[in-house]
Image (cartoon, rainbow, N blue to C red; front, side):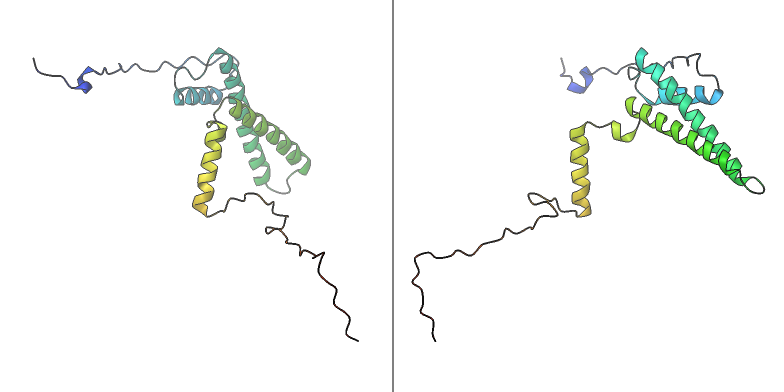
Length: 166
């Protein structure tokens, strides 16, 4: 009986098409449902549990609101004549709030680049980037402290005094 290689014992997992869970009813617009499908399809199947799906729905709603407000600000700026500064200020304030809410939810859902790494991995990657950029790691002295310790001259106690030459 011929020997079999170790690779022949391995099994190939069946390719099962990913079933995207339907978007919740709270997502009213087509764009929110499209954002939902894109994010669900970009992550492994077990990435979103039931609790995270509601946060993802909120993220989709905030992201869509941000996009709508961005279009409104662009339209206001491109309008003929003077732009209404009061309306522009309100739109920018609302857009800023939607942006912060979407960014906070993206971090909690681990969708943003900075939230994908553990703190140890992020620290080591930052140190590696600093080394490649030629940044010297400061150890010990703070930037506002003198880098070299000051050496005080010792006063000799038992030295005979020299008479003053008059």
